[in-house]
Every structure is written in C-alpha cells, then in structure tokens.
Image 1 (cartoon, rainbow, N blue to C red):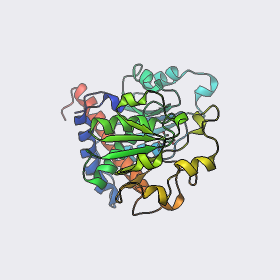
Image 2: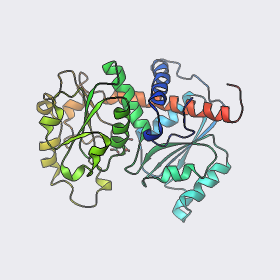
Image 3: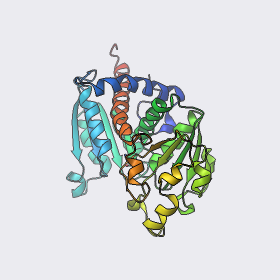
Image 4: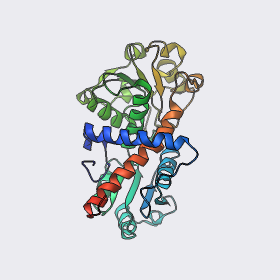
Length: 314
Ligand code: NCD
C-alpha cells in the first residue's frame, strides 16, 4: 500500500513506496511484451487525463496503461476545452470531478498546479509533469530501466547532463536516486544549473570530463527552450561542442555506462544521433517501454488505496 493518496512528486514517496512500484511494474513488463497485453484489475474504473502542455510519450503511455488494466480512459484535449473560453483550472477540475473519475492524470506548465488541483477533487491525482517542479513517473521509469540494466538501484554514479534549471525530470531523478543511495552529478553550463542545488545532495560541474568520469549512467536532457526567456546558451553548435554527448565524451564514462534520455530528443544538440541509436549503449527505447509498466503499477496501486478507503475488500 502506498503511503500517499496521490502521486504528486518523488518527494512524497518513501524508499518502500518506490520499491513497491518498481516490483509491481516489473511484473507487467513481460505481459506487455507478449501478445496478450490485457491483465485487468481496473475494470469499471474511470481515468481522465488532462494535458495542458503537449506530450507524446507520457500521455500515450498513461492511456495504454489504463487500457491494459481494463479501465475506461478519457483523454481531455485541453487545447479545445472551456479553458479557452476563460474557465479556470480549478473550475475545469471541479466539473470533471463531478463526473466521478477514479484517477486524474494531469500535466500543467505551472509548478504546483497539480498539487493545488489535488486539494480540490475527491479522486486520486497523478502528476504527469508540473512546470519545472516534478515528473515522478518519469523518474520511476528511469529507475526501473536502471535497475534492470545494472541489476541494482543503489551505489551507482549517475551523471545528469544539460538543462537542469528547467527540468522537472532532473528534479524528480535527483530526489529518487538520492533516496535510493546513489551518487548524482549534474553537468551543464552554470546558466542552466540552479544556484544552491548542491543542497539536494548532488555534485555540480561544468566540465563533461570530470562529470562523466566513472559514471555508470549518463542521462542527457533536452534544452527546454520553451521555458527559457533569454540567452541561456550561446548557440546550439557551441552547446553541442561542450556538452553534446558523442562517442569521444561517452568514452570518459565507465565502459559499461548506459545512455538515457527522457525524450523528446534534439539530435545534434544534446546528443549525437549515432549514440542515441547505439543498441549497445542507449536504453532510450527501453525507457519508453518501462513507462507503460510503471504507469500501470502507479494506477493500480493508487486505485487499490482508493478501494480500501471506500471499504472494499481487496
Ligand atoms: C519531459 C517532460 O515533458 O518533462 N518529457 C517527457 O515527459 N518524456 C522532458 C522534456 O520535455 O524535455
């Protein structure tokens, strides 16, 4: 049983919660790879997804996850909703809440918007990314990918490279990897590293050589230009030269280091296309696959919590 009724951030999870989610997700991986992908468990339940920011992977994998568990899944297109007519986020949420969904999956451009919404509705809420704050299911799927590839999720050195300042993926990963006893190094230009981030227990450098030395995992991040209001980096070409992951830079990490990226990728900006496609090093496609399994586990565990709250025998 998870300790919280919602999944708003990794900061709310205990190490035990994380282990429980990953163990359950593991059991869904094999089923997802087979021909019969339905496993049930959420029949009769309703999941509503509300994405106020564009998404490919995250929304699609929540939808598939819900369907594989047998739930009804409604994807609200927030671009065409009443929000365009001036309705507030909270009014929209209250309207949806009145339709009695069991689980609400929300992505929003404002940090904290999903927690605010969770206080106003009666169902379980999952944060699918809020501003630059948190993206907990991404960190969980990254953790599952690392655990499967490295055989453990502790005592590893993980280098997270690029636009840390605008990245909710980085924040959630820093929290999760730290909780599980790993060493996290952040690499990027000083303009893209938030000041005081060392307080989160990470090491910081602007030198790829120093940051990648001895790394077991190299996690690359996209330059989030939509969240930048000015010149954070001189030019894409110069950025690639200093921070883009190519074969030469990857050779500085451990010889068995894996390469990760949450997507969407900008080839030739933060990562060389041949590294991204190298099946011996890159686990980028596996991350997407683990995304469905992890989201199934989260939906399943949160709905079980609901059932207990309602007094249903499970
Ligand atoms: C990330 C996001 O939206 O925060 N993408 C994702 O969920 N896979 C990272 C990004 O947009 O760069």
